[in-house]
Image (cartoon, rainbow, N blue to C red; front, side):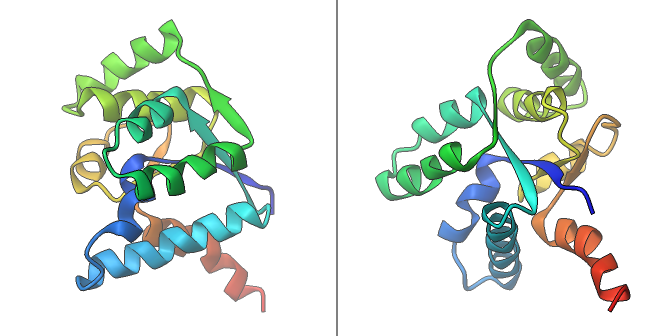
Length: 153
């Protein structure tokens, strides 16, 4: 199986810092941490972007900001700003997505990612009409990408 190129948004990076007493949040955290373990193990290619920098650097929480910043160095690719990204971001904004979310998704698309992983319910709902990339939560990502391995055993 070839490596998947993926992009995680800030919501997914922050999920383990959320209230783990809620089952859905706990399960998304475990799934996201599993995805990150797969990235560290070389199973997936991680893309980081200027938007990832911008949003993470804007965080008022030192612990979160430092823990997430490590992933910039782990990422294999970096997506800088460009007019193409701004143009594509405007297209996604027309679907009702917020500007930052639109630009994150545009970075992922322009970087050739197959998956954009998020835990943001609004982003998941409003991105259903995006054909350029699969916008998905970490649980569904694992279900879709790892399910086939079990069938081969």
